[in-house]
Amino acid sequence: MRIVFHLGAHCTDEERLVRCLLKNRQTLSTQGISVPGPARYRALLRDTAIALKGQAANRDTQSLVLDQIMDEDQANRLILSWDNFLSFPQWVLKDRLYPAAAERVRAFARIFPDYEAEFHLAIRNPATFLPDLFAKQRDKSYEEFMLGADPLLLHWSDVVEDVLQHNPGVPLTIWCDEDTPLIWPEVLQAVSGHAPGTKLEETGELLATIMSPEGMTRMLAYMESHPPQNALQRRRVVSAFLDKFAMPDRVEMELELPGWTEDTVAALSASYQADIARIRSLPGVTFLSA
Image (cartoon, rainbow, N blue to C red; front, side, top):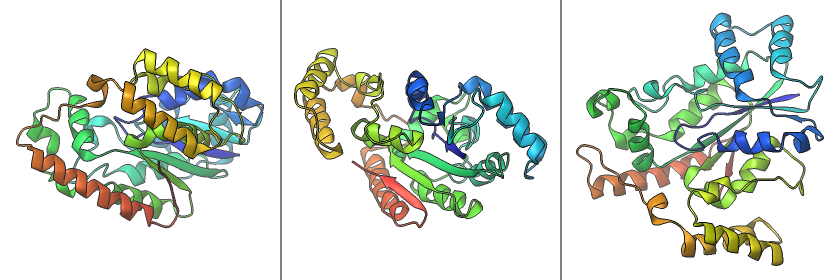
């Protein structure tokens, strides 16, 4: 069995992936894919990792944890999703992004040392990620939130390299949150590992948050009468309908943080593009792109 960790990050998925997979749990179960409810494992894994103090769990502990998480006697893949695997929101920044990410991910993976692990992570432009993350802070000023960090020096590639270094040989799949509406089926397939051609139900939640109801209805009707023959065709259809029916208030963000200007946002976006190129080049990374 392979243990699949969907790591978030914060301010990207907002639980949509696990909700969608849970709605398709019966279909996925026929393919040996186990999708337990988050309440069954999040606190359990956190407490177990703390108790292990970075050590590998023995077989009895592994069996005990799996018995509490899974209903199935056996599975090929076990899907675990939590944006706090890397860090809780208040500790995401300290001179860099997710300074404890690699250590935490390794600690969670070592709960299951007898099983193969697999990691999945969405990244996001710091120009939009930082304002959304700041909004999650409680009673913190901008200065307390940033802790003196320079936004231009916050790189996702540092997080990715650390995770790979502390978990050698473990596959890591990355995608940009900005691309998710266009590559949602590929993201679902990468995480769940379901067989090609599997039809998942209720996969439109993400697009419904940014596209008008009329647009969704017309797009689904178009796809019904003109089924896309491949992923590229589907992306082109979705992109065309988003161009016409995207809801401006859902896709345009107010980027208001103290001291930020349009030049700040432009510089952060340029740095992000360079960071993406660096991540793509890293051995062990599979990058999903639109």
